[in-house]
Image 1 (cartoon, rainbow, N blue to C red):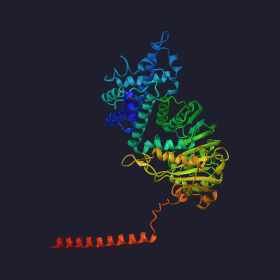
Image 2 (spheres, rainbow, N blue to C red):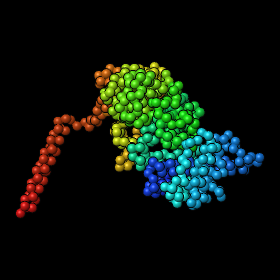
Image 3 (cartoon, one colour):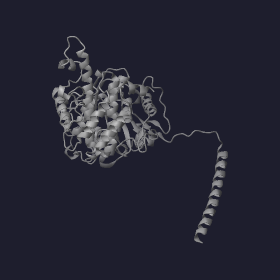
Image 4 (spheres, rainbow, N blue to C red):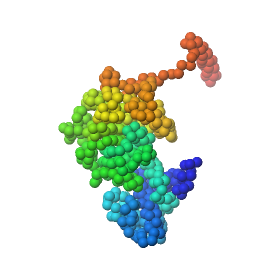
Length: 517
């Protein structure tokens, strides 16, 4: 009921996202998902900043002595200044001109004007709405549909609706685009788990392959949910895909999240835009098992402190890059394919061994399958820290926590699984209890779920970090039935089934005999 009430207050039902998706889906005949996401998300962005501007404009207009056309009145309150040609509402607004055949050019001109007035958005917004392949009638219908929702009011729920629209679409686009979608979307429950584990309250947060910025958004939500100040976080990221880099800039801009993504997109391995950064928190979902990362040109790189990574697989290049970016007391949480926990190819086993012996590995989590929209490759979470002697790691030097979460999660549709809030709470609470944190409870190994292993334990397993090797089998509840009675009951049941099977076989043979006659 509360969910429905929030919808009513904002003038748009949560099924709006689905309607918007269906409308966007009509464009499939003219472009693929990779293209039309920018058509829709660009319009949502433009509508949002125009709504926020209009609300501020109306306030200024009602204030004696204030000039609603004074640009400084908006920038002072961190509201985007929207020039007249880019405004959504009004007689001459984009909404009123949605049915004009020139609507594509008008939207492009609006995007150019927004970038001109807001320097940090330069080169970020999509500006190809006038292209012949984009059906202008359907574009007008999309504008009409976007016009039915209030996105940019000052109330935080307005931003929440916009966030849901973006999140819904990113997930849908990831699903529609197949493999390529994973370049910019990480399932929300996985991101939330990473954030709940490392708890980025205050300091520098870094993502070397930031995609659409989901790690940053969730970090900000975490701070807000725990009563912290957003100004306590400094955000740094890098993204090599130019389209995704622009999407990230838009995604963070609509939430008012200040960030340093560098002046342009760039390859993290070959053009590190944050060379001097030492981060307190690192959150990342590097692309799995990348083979063409140019590793042959970086054999002597100073980042490879624990061994040169395979030129045919970038997994341990990502891991060591993140280690090189950690501040002395920093912690990193990231997603990798399961192969990273056990592979011995191309020196990966030696790199993993060196990291374990350096006591960098804090926690390993095996994830359930079917979490990701774009890959069926089984995945795991790594948590590393440079110093387990710093709080709150003081009592866990020389130990690693293993959590096997493969049996957790619920199916959200026929092919996708998601971790529930209860699953997330159970995993995070186990980790924080293991670290001895206040109010987290007392840690205890749970067969089949979690185990605190020593360096000796890991050495005996050949430096393999797969949680299933350590947590053991889940204990079955003892129902109190004596063994002799249980065995007798089971044998009797088996004999009954044998007898039933013999009767069925006899009946089937009789029927087959009848068919021959």
